[in-house]
Length: 189
Image 1 (cartoon, rainbow, N blue to C red):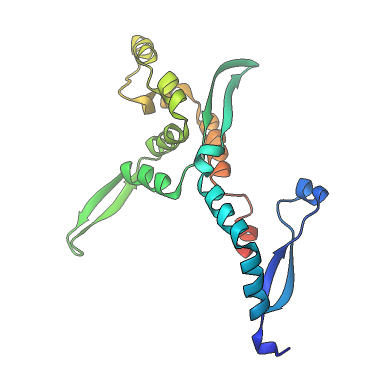
Image 2 (image 1 turned 45 degrees about the vertical axis):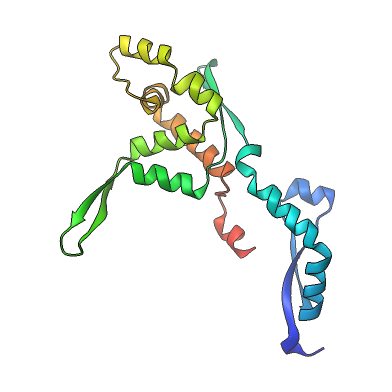
């Protein structure tokens, strides 16, 4: 077979033990262009269904977060993954922009990282738990009675979660959203 007509394709092969040990095992093999097209035709329905299933990740993937201090469960809520657009909207909302006269456009000056982090947690919280915890008017009133300034659900997150707890919740959100520790390995595949 002519080397110029060959092209590399990555084939995933896993047995049950490998699935438990690793997410994906790849092996590089050489296929001709016609063999590659044939493989695509054979697996086209699987690919289509895989794309449809993958698109529903925000509804299917959730994780329960429990806030436990000194062995006592204070409260719990459930998070879902965030889309790239949701990350971007949270960032834009809490970034201050200034008009640059030289370029005639607005440029980002500073991001309020505290509010940005709170917004990510709020956005990733499922609607039922947003209503029950962050947007609960009884909680707002109780916190106001303690002298705290509560204007939105983000303020409840600010006052009820410690900085380290927020870090751990954000790590869980990032993980659910597909941001892995080893991004280099994901990019190669």
